[in-house]
Image 1: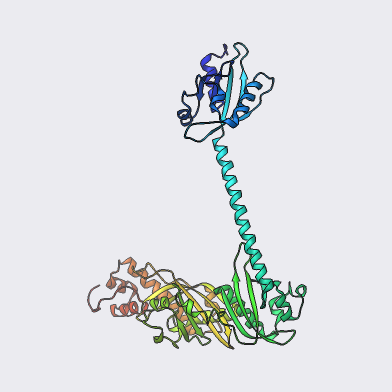
Image 2 (image 1 turned 90 degrees about the vertical axis):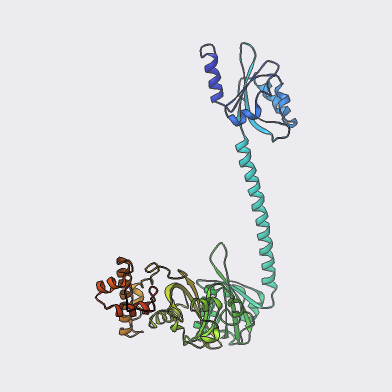
Length: 459
């Protein structure tokens, strides 16, 4: 220490530890050095002149005595000690002591363990939370298993995508006249006659899209008995599954049809919702849809064609019905809703199809992309992918496809001209090679801008 100098030695000690203590041969603290200012403010000089053993908690007194005793040994031994403070939390420190050979004093170096203690406490809290959540999960699973196994109704669980059966309850085995090991692993379609394949697929697709669905007049393959099936979508941490209930008789059971009997609940959804017949005539429309199309009551549009409000020139509805027939459900399809008074709103559409009582029923859910078209050119109709246009070939006359594409291009060009001329319609008409009367007519057609009552003057 003489070669290093007292000041240099003190700096080395402080740099190598959070807390450094100098004790005399009797274990009394003679000096304290703390690297962290916050820790230094807490300790201060209150330990100077006191035996180290008096600064620790009752539980750590034995460890403090062991620390002083091992300072004379050949090896270095670390001891974790808690210091007590009146009206405050304990201070955990990990110490090692070294005895100086000349005067018998001890240098005690300590590392602050508060950060580690906080991490340990967090780990304990997390473990307790995990154990509590796991106990709740096991309890819920046990209750579900008990109800599933003891239910007097035939219940099955199947993968939502592949429709492959994962579980069946005893009542299901009795109805299907098969043991569980012959049912599990087979597909849902294998339980019914081939003529029911489309109805089963539609029911599963509707459940995936809307959360629940039902279908009737299904005939079991093995017994030829007529049953109805209700399906609910189960979402969890893994793949989505379907909970299925089979009921004797061909009539759908109460409270299971997502496209019919559940309308009372769906009508209050904040999302725009419509059901339609196989010919796309509106059956029901909720308040949110009525608001989007500027209609006062559902009676005004009941039995009206949905194509009157969705898409342009009927092209969108041909695409939708074609895809629904091929896939059973579609999601996030970009289109437009046309209001009763000409307002046009960009929306995303989700739809599903189901056969109910041997009649096809469509369900549509609309989510506005923008609530309004407040500024000219800000909200333009989404461009249709080329694949969607080519899908129409063979299903829609060529003149309708060309007219749809032409309308999209014409609308975009008008919006661009108005943006360049800063909404100067006279200049925009000249730029487009149109008369002002022709431009005003197209503005009305596409619902662009706010036209004045007198369209013969100015801009």
